[in-house]
Length: 206
Image (tube, rainbow, N blue to C red; front, side):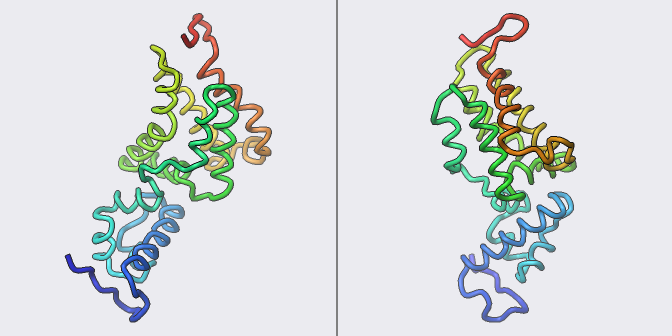
């Protein structure tokens, strides 16, 4: 398949890799600003200075572009790996710190962008569920290896998503302005209890 030519910027794109990176940068900007439903492939192409055909050439579909823009590959970031490396001991605090600090470093972090878009678009919701399952709940359930492992891991997902929405999207105070250490101190034990604590009906991990 022949790579489509760009228009309007002669000599600007010397390699396909440069074109692809420019498209991804434009997509990250527009998805962050307008969400999945409010961003079109044509708008991304215009922002990147390329033909819409080139976007489809590299990414196939809008959903493929969205996933690539959020770096939703099978590669697990080192920060996420470190959460699970220490086992279940202290995993609640490690998880909250990692999630919050990753968003603090970039407000275009995958979890945040997906959460913003999921409420208004089915494809974004599917990608969010895939991301949460791959990065968090699936691995947590495997670590627990108990009959209620999926339920416990799901409760952790509720804590993570609730915190992300309250702090970064709705901006509920005092969560929105609380220091990271305070969030870790308050939410870490909640996540830990979801995974390893005893419930009111007496259930506890085997």
